[in-house]
Length: 163
Length: 234
Image 1 (tube, chains in turn purple, orange):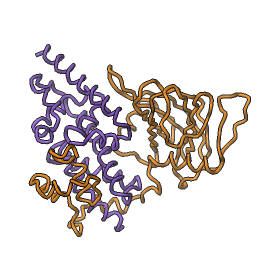
Image 2 (cartoon, rainbow over the protein chains, first blue to last red):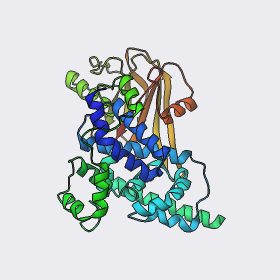
Image 3 (cartoon, rainbow over the protein chains, first blue to last red):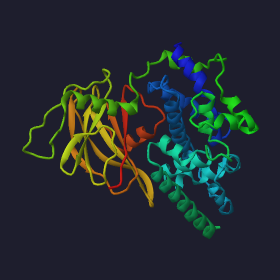
Image 4 (tube, rainbow over the protein chains, first blue to last red):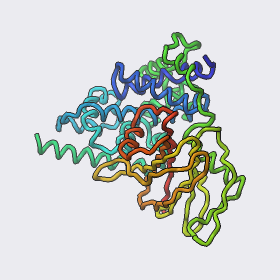
């Protein structure tokens, strides 16, 4: 096995598992997404790239794959009273409790808005870091987050009416 | 760092564990914060990889990685083309001859995409700069072994999201081909994410979307090139 591959595995797989676990919880799904992301990293020829480049790429790619997984989960109506949890600024802990809630709204919020929200609220990234990860400027990130909040607000009203 | 009084982001902590952090205060915070120190310990690379999983062995035995990263192909490609030919295609003008650039500088067997931009009538090869609203773009593809191409753009609106099919059609294998359509960028400032899916046979739009969302693509049958075009406000 190539040294490059084992080195990349040693450097990046632990943080990748942690990142996926934050989004998807412990278990096979987080491991699957971490593995999938790592395989894509290798096949993209990025395994030996500079660490800042690789980490940004890993955050972007694993977030997108994890969001796809969340969207694929069986949809169920969110608890309208709990929807506000999605707007908590430092949500790494509260997110753990609200993971099911994110799953339930994942297919109702546009993916880019969701990516930006996950990166800020789950991974605690600053808007500048999100801009770096998503390859856009900070103003666009702010716009995405504003739209995310509007989506959550609309969802809360919608679910509140249905409840 | 989110702020001096808050925890650094997990990205910053990951980078700290790899020795690639940017913020000067990260190390000090980690040293004094139990939560962050505990996290950094979990992600700090071991001296030696303890147990190498079976899938990693399989990965090592499978196809070697691409010589260039997927997302860099268009950039590298456009740079090489611009450097080699000083290309300025005038494909909007029917009277102008199409000055073909030299061969693509890419690994043998890898499909590639070049983007041409028409900004206020001036056409140039895109080299990564932010585009203006209402610029038009046109794609040139080198399909290598593939014979069909599907082009999608990510669409986002208040009404929802999805992928909008821009173009589908046959392309000539082992040749460069300018796709017959041009697309104008909208006024939104968000970047345009374009997916160019090469396939070995004609596929339906629905099948193309299926492949785009697949976790893995069989490179013998399909290959995806993704291009992100940043936009600026005018």
